[in-house]
Amino acid sequence: MKQILSAISYCHYHKIVHRDLKPENILFDTQQGTSNLKIIDFGASAILKNDQKLTQTIGTPYYVAPEILKEEPYDEKCDVWSLGVILYIMLCGYPPFYADSDFEIYQKIKSAQVQFHKKDWKYISSQAKDLISKMLTLNPQNRISAAEAQAHPWITNNIHIEQLDDKMMKKLTQFTAKNKLRIAILQLMVNQVINTQEKKDMIKYFQALDTNGDGMLSKKELVQGLFYFYEQQYTKINIGYIKFIKDPIKAKKIVDQVFNQLDQDGSGKIEFTEFLVISLQQEKLYSKEKIEKAFKLIDQDGNGQITKNELESMMGGIPINQQIWNNLMKDCDLNNDGMISLSEFINLLINIANKELVN
Image (cartoon, one colour):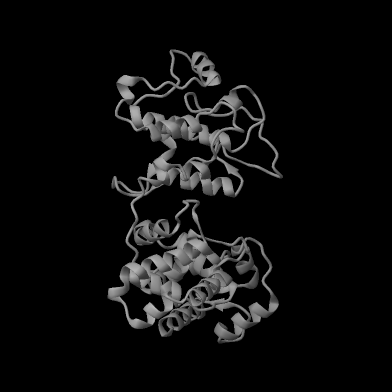
C-alpha cells in the first residue's frame, strides 16, 4: 500500500486524478511477486486546473467515491476513497460495501457506514482500521489525503529501510555540472532506453531516500540520506568521506550543486528520472546500443541527423537557448554542418561519461 500511496501522491502533486483505481489497475512490474507495483489505465484520469472541481460521473462499482455517486463536484480525494476500499479488501478479502445489485452497492457507498466484522478483523491492528476509516470518510473535506495517509503510523511503522549502496551515494556526492540540454538527453535515455531490471536497485535506493514517499526527493531528504548512509558505513569508507559527512555546510553545498543541475523546473524536488541520471552505472547508461536507441528516438524524420528543432521537440517544445546550442555544436559537431550525426552523438555522450569517471 505504501507504493500505491506514493504513486498516487505523486499524481496528486501534479494535479492528476486517476478516478478508476481498483485491483485490476494495479500490476506487478514483473512476474516476480517481490517486484514493484505499477498503476495502469489512466483513460479515465483528469487534470485539476486552477483548483477547479471535477463533475463527470465515472468509476467502477465497489470502488467509486460517494461524492461522485451523489453528482457533487469532487477532487483528488476520490482516489483516496478507492484506495481505502482496496486496502479493506486486501486485509479481509471482501469489499466494505457489497450487495446483489449495483444500485444497492451505490446506496451503501453513499451512506459510508464502514463495518469491521469481528470474525474477519479480530487479528487486524487498530492502526490499520483507523487508516481505513480515515480513507473512507464520507465528507471528502474531512477525508485524509494520499500524502497524509503515507504519514499514518500503520504505514510508517511497517517500512523496511533499504541499505544504501556506497557507489551510488558517492555518485551523488561527486556529481559534476552539465548543461540542461545534456541532462535532458540523459533523461530521455533513462526513460525510454533503460529497462526495468536495470533500474531495479535504483528504485530501492530512491525509495529509501524518499522518506515521505511522495515520489520525489527534497533537499532535506537528500541531506538526511547522506548523513544516515555515512553514519552507517563509516567503517567501509575513507577518512575523506568521514570528514565530509561531519561537515553539514559542505554536505548542503554538495546537495545544492546536485539540485542546481537536476531540478530544472525549480520545484525544489528531484524526481525519479532525474535521480537515475546521476545514479545509474556508466555501463548501463552509456552502451553503444542504448545510445543508438536514444539517437533514433530524437531523430524523428529518420535522416540520420539530429537538428535543433528535433531536440526542442524532445524537450517538450521548450526553445533551446542559442548559446547553449552553440556550445553543444562546439563540443560535438565535428564537420560543422549544424546538425548532430550518430557518431557525433556517441562521442558527445561518451565524453560526458569520461568526465564523470575522471571526477
